[in-house]
Structures are given as C-alpha cells and as structure tokens.
Length: 292
Length: 292
Figure 1: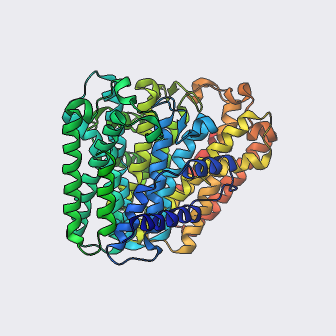
Figure 2 (figure 1 turned 90 degrees about the vertical axis):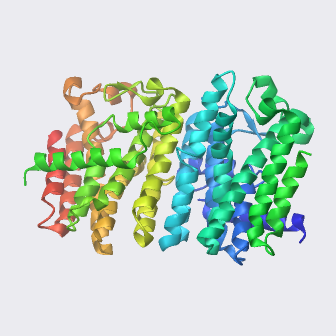
Figure 3 (figure 1 turned 45 degrees about the horizontal axis):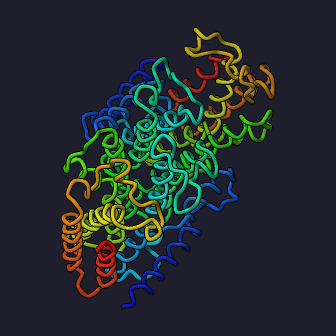
C-alpha cells in the first residue's frame, strides 16, 4: 500500500463530493451560499471525511456510497470552525492563512453560513440514504455533534479558559468531546455505510476515541515544541494564553507517552480488521510520528 | 369543537413533550443545557408544534406519536430566535418580556445553545422514528430549516434591511422562506407521522404556505395599527426602522385583503380533510380576525 497515493485518492474524492453535495454558490441567496463554499473550500487535511471513506473500504465498499456521509461530516466540522472563530468565541481573524468567514464576509453571514452547513449535513444524509441506514447515520451524527459531545466540549473549553487551571478530568472531558467525538463518528459512519456489525462498530468507535485523543495530545505537543513555520500557524500560543493542555498538566515526555499509548490502542482496535486496515493503521502511526 | 379547550390540550402536550425530549438542565455541561431550557421554556404560542399535533390528528393519530416531531420543530424555531436576537443580527435584549439568551447568559453560550437546539432537533427525530418515516421527517425539517428556506429567508431579510427599499418579490421570498417554510413543515411532518398520501401532503403544504403568509401579513398590519399594550411588544417598530413590510408596500387596506385571501386559500386547502379539520380551520380564521 502506497499511503500517500491512497491519501490523495481519498482527498480527491472528498473534494469532488463537496462540490457535488453542497449547493452551488450562485444559489439564492448568493451571499449565503458563497460563504458556505468559501469556508468548506478553505481545505485543510480532510481528516474526518477521509476516515469515513477508509472505514467504509474496510467492508469492501469501494464505490462512492460513503461519500455523502463523508461530506456531511465535513460540513459539521466546517460549521464548528466558523462558529469557533467568531468574535464572541475565539475571535480569530485567520484560518489556514485566509481570512475567517466573519472577516471575509461579516459576522451575521458567518453565523448563518455555520447554521446552514450544520443543517445541510442532515439534509445530505436524508437525501442520499434511506430507511434504517439513514436513521442510524442521522442519530450517530446528531449525537456526536450535539450538546453532550462536540458542542458540550466546546462549552467546557470556554469555561475552562476562564479558570486559571483545568483539572485532568476536565481536560479529558473537553478532548473526548470536542475532538474525539467527531473522529469516532467519522469511522462509525463509514462502518454503518459498509454494513458493519455491532461488534465491528464498537471496534471502530474505540479506534476513533483513541485516535482523537492522540490527535489532540500531539497537537498540544507540537504547539509547545515546533516552530511556526513548521506548524503553518503561530506556535507557542497555548503557553502564552495560559491554556490548560496535556503538556501543561503532564509535561512533554509524559504527553508523548500518552500519545503513543492512545495510538497503540487505536491500532489494536483496528486489528479487528486485519488484512484491510493498512491505510488506517499507517494514518494513525504517521500522526504519532509527527510529534516524535 | 371547543377551540380554546383544544388549543389548551395541544399546548399542554407540547410543554410535556419538551420536558420529555430535551436533556435535563443538570446534564453536563450544565450551563449549556440550562441555556437551552431557558430559551425553550420562554414559551410563546407554540404555534408550530400545535400545528404538527393537529395535522397528525387529521389522520386519526390521537396518541403521542407526533409529539417528538412537534418538539423537534420547536427546537428549530427556538434556535432561530436565539441566533436572530444576537448582537450581530437583530441585537434584541428582550423577548416576551424576558432577557434574551445572550443577555441572561452571554453571547458564546447563546450561540452554542442555538447550535445545540438545532442539532438536537435531528437527534429527536432519529431517536423516536425509524426507517423511511425517520428519513422523510429529517429531510422535510432539514429542507425547511436550510439555506434555501429558513436561513435563506433570514439572510435576505438582513440584506433587505440595508437597502432603502425591498421589492414585492424580495419581500415574498423573505416571508415564504423565513416564516412560511417552518409552518409548512409543521403541518407536513404531522401528516407524515399520520401516514398521509402524497396528495394529502401536498394539501398540507399548500395550507401551510398560505397560513404562513397570512400570519406574516397580519403581523405587519398589527405592528402598524395596534398599540403596544395589545401587542405585548413595542408597536410601530417597522415604520420607525423603515423596514419594508406588506403595509409599507401595499397599504393597510390592501394588506388586509391579502391576509384574507391567504387565509381563504389555507382553509380551502384544508377542505381536503373535511370532517376532521375544524380545529385547524378555526385556528386559521381566528388568526385572520386578530387583524380585522
């Protein structure tokens, strides 16, 4: 397996899927649909939708039947970034080197474009799947993106920023929900489209949880150790703002051990799909190497 | 049929449904779930969920099987009010005499509570319905609340406010989408739960469109003619802000004729359910009388 070629194959499919399943920018109201596309097309690694496509392929689903689910997940991820960047939240002017949505348009348009992407994710699922599969996908996505998980994690993150110190248990709640929930859902939704059994879905959920935690811990380590040029964003931001991170609570060496432990746990869970899991295993291991 | 008793019966069911289908305020994060409940429990007429329950009863669905759909619609309506009230939108401090969510909590909490209610609407549908019915309900709600309808209408409304004059066709787009879309969906979702045929769903959609337009025209007339005490909110606000309304474009007398015409069209569409439509007919006619 050529990991880079496989990754490219998946991301190309995701870009095509976004173009296919999101209204064209000239749809009325044009300003709203232009803003939705602006944020969706800002790119990024497309980690979550790639996980969905790769999870579906574990079950031999090689056609585009998981693509709408993958695009729905990217719509949710993009909406959460637009709303997180708003002045009343993180107040960020730039994302991946481009003006954030409320800078490129205005706050009201950004708010509505986020609302619209969130809503559209569910429209995509309802339009492209039917019966029990549609209901299961909607349920998985609504739970992962809901008040107990993605939004709940964001809320606790905001509350933690106001306190001088978050506890390890608070940090875990934040990252299990703000980061890991959508990574879990990405794998599980691919599994649902692929026809996974309950046992297989549980293995995907476990893999997603550990992958999500590893991803977040590595992000914290890189913020503390890499330079801005390598990161492509301002390094050392966490220490400057006094944000509670794995590095702040546990130190670099212990954080590296925790990242490795979560990566190992993710790879172990993927072993349930031995024979077809090479891409996902490489992805997990490659992520861990970034912070070594 | 005793209209007031029937209305009371439906609203009581809606209040109970909200309590049953929305997470308790002590769910973690408590601040987020408290804010969601705060806005949901601010009350109001519960027009949309009552329409859903009444539409289901047209098909003999007298039990609570349409209640989750009704609550999902109220979650969407409430989220749209929370986001509309934010400083970057209408910047309202009060709604129904109580501080708006961002005043009672803060902007970030209000933003997230809105996002969470929007997401939870789809969770309710996926958890309480199965198979094709679940998919059809999600599709109907996501379309009505989406970028071409509810959110699109809100976007065009904001853009129209910045211009000195909106055209009659722009005003119609705004109200067909900002107001009528969710009223249509309320009736159609009740019909879906009740097992309506395609023809019956089309009749409900037509009734909802006209009811929604009548509702909005009457709102414009009352703003221009009633006093604040009668309205329970500041009267004459539209004229003061120069907002384009039916009254501004067409005058009071012609607006009254348009409201009556839409009410008649709604009642005519409901005649497809002759024998069981007494409550919905009374509701439509009672609404029209308000502005006479």
